[in-house]
Image: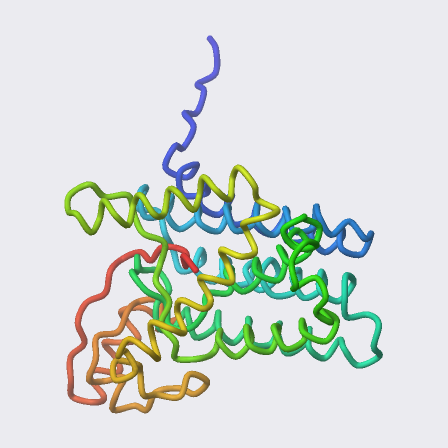
Length: 301
């Protein structure tokens, strides 16, 4: 009599799938750091971009399979801190900034702001699909730095006036601007979903696909300019197109006061204690909290 074979737990395999993409992001982040230390900045940039692809997939897979979890949200943020904070800063240091003794401080500032941005993201937006981001997303900031070296090796760079700029002096300023934007109140749009249901959706889909095709055909030429344009777009839309009055008024680096937390709905991702913690708080305060979802998908920063 043959022994009974246990059937594979497909549910467990599906639950692990989003975290597999997240760990893939971590693999590329670490490999980017190793490549930068070896002086292979071209491949280091590719690793950061591949990490961005993994980061985009983990949240979407978790939502499609409904297998998101609090663990996935926290793991995603920790991995993003490496792939889009530490790795791009190391690329900039070894490629440009290691000429000066104290230039590494710009790397520290960039990494610190990326970590603070991810912590704030978990509190405000983690685990939900979104149409806009509060502050520059860390993947966009990290890939902007990582793809600069690509652009510097193209004829589009060498045959224009930007090649004569003192980039070893300009890039620290670029890093500071990106750092401040990550912890700012500036609103940035999320990548659009493909939609053919309205003229606006069709126009947005065509523009998005055109950008993707251009970057895929000539990544070294177009990746950095496209990312710079995205950074500039958020600033222009926020400060020139009348969105200043819609910005959040709370300090992005401080916690909200207790009254604010009691007055607005709270997502599960915002409280480590889950529903039981909120019920205890509600009984002590004499107020009730709205129920939260059972799962939360990894952050889609």
